[in-house]
Length: 448
Ligand code: SF4
Image (spheres, rainbow, N blue to C red):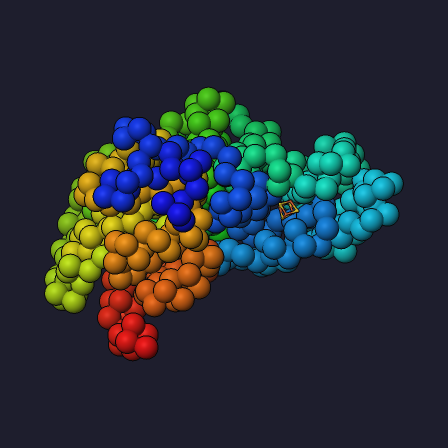
């Protein structure tokens, strides 16, 4: 096991290859092993990716300029209104600020944005160095709120203060801080909030359109195509549905406890998961007409998707897929989606999956499938080679790895250009997998 560190073995199931924890659970939800060069990002990045799609928010990164450029415009989230979120602002902390403190610089940055840009909502991120020098960003934000009468919300996210999942939690806390003052228990609850969808390539619009056709109102979306005005309406919803549970289940739990809004998890990836999610939402909040419309709509869309898949299955059946994504919900949906296409999943891993996710994953794959939590490139390379994967589905950090190994690749993360959610996503995803996996280029690479 030369490419797998001893400390990493508890986080890998690889029956055929001699790894595998205690056989019943996998090591997950823990700090990355030192020296293993994890694919995970930092706490600040976790918070930023969740909050970034709020279209009319300003993001001030209190730290060195590198932290700001690291996460600048990294989500391909689309907006139907403002495009302020495409900017990144930084206090650009230098040596002098580290010695004498950067709080004043932060005050000036907030003032400049308020005066020049007419901001309504600002998030201020504390990065590693701010965690070390101890600038009181909580106090600076509070004073700015009082002085300017706008929302200025601190996100204390030094990169060293936990894992990327901690960043998700901090983003959820920031959103609760934003919407809590707008909760009124006397208001009648109606409609649905969609949590954990970031409107990548317009996927939120596809899902909203389904519910519009069925007659179920969408109140707020977190955070794809969200704005200050739409977010503060969220406490009025009757239920929350959570797509990316890794980033947003905590927000749903807090809204259940504090606003009495129940929630359940959904997925709009693949025919089976999309259909089940629409029917479940209609059952939960729809009237009889909506339930009937949902049944008719999903039956028709399912029939069309099945006919489409039948054309592609002969080109895909028997191929082998590796999956390495951020959270467990997407990995689970992708395994099902590959099965719908006739593709076997031979490697599956996540950056921030939870024990319950891995239990579901194990129930869906064959005993010889390799399962990894918080993998590194050396492990991915080894297991993709040994399982003879034909395609890797991952994000921007996995793309060069696949190409260097001569393996096809599909981007299912921030930068995807085609919507992969909903029934439209089934068509786009199948076409993309087919084009990539059956490209003649791989044959020439392997022969070279
Ligand atoms: S680890 Fe620290 S220094 Fe690096 S990007 Fe994250 S917050 Fe910035």
